[in-house]
Image 1 (tube, helix red, strand yellow):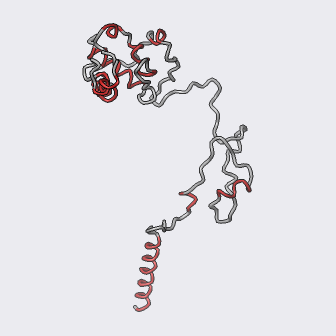
Image 2 (tube, rainbow, N blue to C red):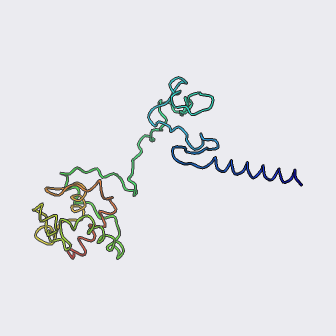
Image 3 (cartoon, one colour):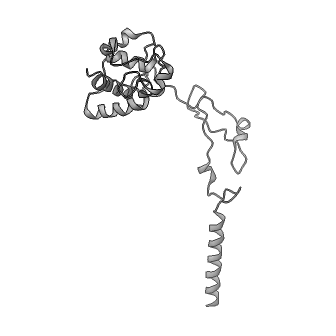
Amino acid sequence: MKITHSIYVIAIAGFSIGLASCGASGDHPGYEYAPQMYNSVAYEPLTQIQNEQEGSWLSNREDGKGEFFNSNINNPHGMNMREPVEGTVPRTKDGSLPYRLKAFELEEAAKIQNPIELTDQVLAEGKVLYYQYCSACHGANGEGDGKAGEIVGGVANLKGGAYIDLPEGHIFHVIMKGKGRMGAHGSQISQERIWKIVHYVKQEIQKQ
């Protein structure tokens, strides 16, 4: 009985010590099983480490050898990243093709049709996006009386003059690339969202 009791005590003590050693506190990060599985050396996309000496400074291996093998040896271009297939056309995160027209190409932009189907949900989303990105200058009703617009001055009244008859592609282009005092928003708003704003402007603000 005493032997069995002693074994239990030793086992519990060992388990407790092992469990405590896994904890992290202060400057001590704790211990990890197979740390290389958690802290692997990242691949450099445009270069390769070709030899042991060059890679030794990256090593976290117990044998001290560098991570010189951390390269895609089958890539003939001397870099880990694969180049796209010739003729590949990149797309944006929302699946759209990159917008190629320059800021001055308004006539070409005016020919573009809105690819987003008009639905009640799209209008609702367009309204939210309009209030987020546009109302500060153009005002809640598109009359150019937003608080920021009062300071900037010269903000378009979307309900007045020639603005009523502007094609959807023209409005999209101006939001993307900017025009006059209006800055480009293409880096801040995705193409899909801009087209939803265009729907809201034409359908709700301009009543087209």
